[in-house]
Length: 83
Image (cartoon, rainbow, N blue to C red; front, side, top):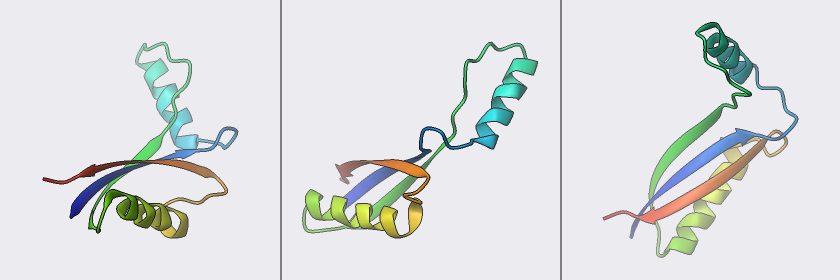
């Protein structure tokens, strides 16, 4: 079966986010009142697996080995069967 995973990678609480700080400052210069801006990255991964659980386990392993740094990142996985 074909599956599509959306992986969202965010910095853990307390980690510096210079990109978010720069975006917040630029938005304020444009006149927008922003409390905070946090950056995140989203990856879309298409893969084949026998079932959704197996697909999720594969994507989780990809995140742990390469996509996310577990020391500074949190990640979430949204999985769906591809038609």
